Image (cartoon, rainbow, N blue to C red; front, side, top):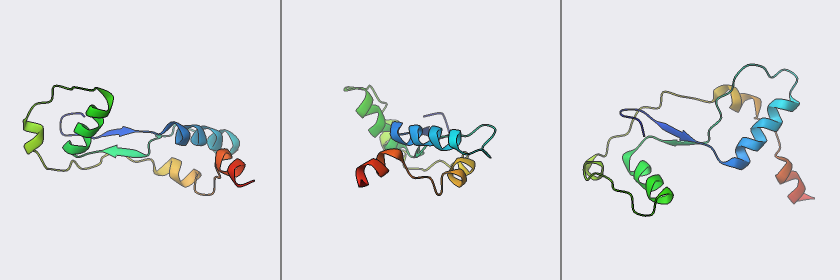
Length: 95
């Protein structure tokens, strides 16, 4: 997590759906920010670090810090485009 910032991540399934949606939409253009999980609290960053590395050496100052960082990034453009998009994986499960 960046100092006084946010860290974003994306689920691979969501990323695939976003790529397909943008490719199939003729009106899509430009760059899109693609994420579906925001890490903006120290405890979320610690949880992520523990999931990635079995024994991370985290400073104790993180345990005392309970503030939440303001989110300064958004994926509104992608969300607007994907509002009616149906995942290919979901449609195959239904059939």
